[in-house]
Image (cartoon, rainbow, N blue to C red; front, side):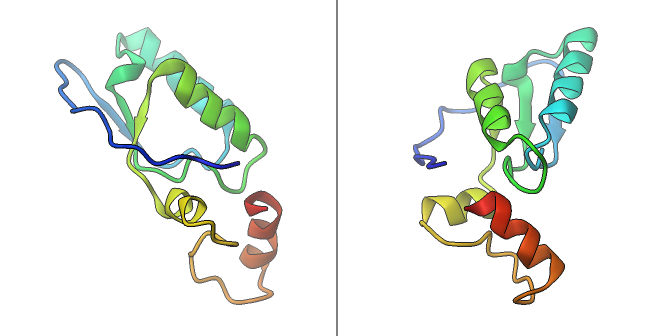
Length: 109
């Protein structure tokens, strides 16, 4: 999945803000967070992820699509940096052949 880096729009927010860690391809958890944000009145445009949208869980494309659909914002994490650079791994420095290295090969490809 190729992500095209582009300059972000100026970030001008008012009201409550939700800043959250990387979804790591976990669409189920992201949807639960969106539901809670709706419940407490925080719009998706006032939700910012610290990056790493894609990683170990089941639905990388679904997570990226949800960000695009809702207008949530994110700060580019190491996964996004590596994808933009055309790298073959996430750049986390896993030991070659270790469990994390093997798992990341599945989702990074």
